[in-house]
Length: 252
Picture 1 (cartoon, one colour):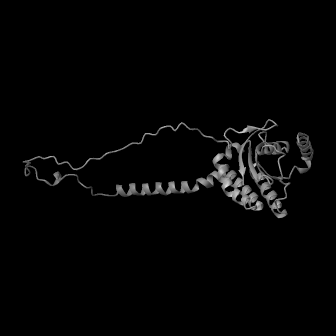
Picture 2: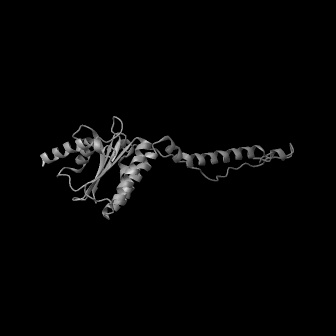
Picture 3: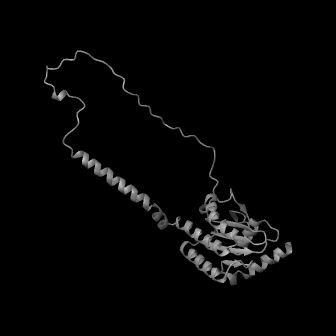
């Protein structure tokens, strides 16, 4: 089995130049030809816009290797990823064991945290359970593109626009109220002293009357002692190539 895996990796490395532009590898024959074309086009668009790699791989088995390590070697020895940090993400689907794994590398470890991966899985895994692999993979790429958009200057500006609009409306309202208050010429008086003729009023009795008590409470925040898990894999792991990865997977 080890000899087979070594041979697979050697052949894979030799094939990389010819497959330099390919990013969808349907070795388990789970995807339709039209979906493969749509995925390749969508992934190409992501790469052009964000300098970020997206890889889809379906395999019949992992040669009894743990899914995450198989995914890491598939990504690393395929020479995927952008920049010196090999920025990119991979979705691996294993048909025989009905397992999947989402692998983060480089900047993806910051963008696709555990919580983000869980959100993506909520949209992708139901399709996997229905054996609708076309929809699952297309949804995966769409979710990746959506998350990447939030990490560009234009994407962040679009996300902040509703908050900026609300802030502008509130500021305008406050300014209007201030100008309106300044235009009032009549002021409410707290006593009638201005309307009493001097020497005409004598106070014979004074009495204190209790009306009510106002109580204010301030919440004191305490540290929970927890930390940011981050990285999509609780610290991640290192593949056989020496590259650091993180991610998450499971059965479907």
